[in-house]
Length: 192
Length: 266
Image (cartoon, rainbow over the protein chains, first blue to last red):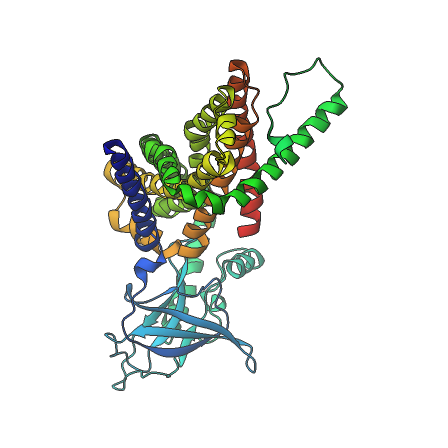
């Protein structure tokens, strides 16, 4: 009798341990751990190209996660990607002229939506749409342009149309900065 | 069906390759029929639920130590190796992701199944083989106790139930080992390790798929172990061969089934 009780207790403990391990794996090491069931509101954004953006990809401001990608669909008229973004209700003070961009974490990491805050006094509400968006930068395009132009591409090429406003500044400064640097290395090379 | 379950007669003199091929096909067929008769006996075996619990204790709880030790070391070596490989590409931040995905999807179920075949499968085969050799199974039949329901089915069920739990424990210890190596020894950031893991591991596609796999592996290993024990020639040599065959066959079938299941569950 005693022995029987001991193995029954052992079996029970084993089963409990196994299920505890399963619960731990399922809740603490997977995307469930990131899942916040807090109240959220949804805003829309249209991109000409979303690259490798996936459902539940993070949405960040200044690198802080504020929400996630809720749905990805194709706009049939404009043939653009229609992305629904759900943002936690705690972050309800986003100016409505903010810009949404798709960036890559690291060189080859996952893609996420980064929001650059604007300066408008009115705030984004549920159902609003981002006016300014910037598509994901396609590595293949960059490489293709680099090969065709035979050198560092003009930064103006790499933007896909609807760029965020302050990109214009970099556009004007960069071409001026790059060619001298390039010719520098060339002259050095010839000199050597 | 009972003719299939009779112990094989002592091996006859050497025959041609064709009949050996026929023998192995017949083995596969007999094993499948055996599976059917186990499944048919499961309702009756619910009367002997205490025997099933004892078998879960024996094949599951008693295997915990070896599973936990091996899981820890597999996780540690994964941490070391992948850290080295990922550092070539400057991607050591992905260590947690890569370790957890490879454990949940492949290594957890497969290595646990191989260990399970070695630790529990062999003892099931040897136990049933000796029951056969000492006529205990014939005695049960004489006492109107169905040996399929009292001997075979509880061990089969115990394998199906215990294997996923063991694989989960293995995975957990593996993650712990990789964390130990990556974060505590190699200085990876703790937050990076966990957040990269949680952002790219999916419950259904990764964790639960691994659980299905280990259920299937548990069934296969337990079936082969019980079948080999049940059909072994009732000699000490026969039991020895049957034990070896359990490990060899279940390893092969687990690895082959792993490929097939991965292709289907992708």
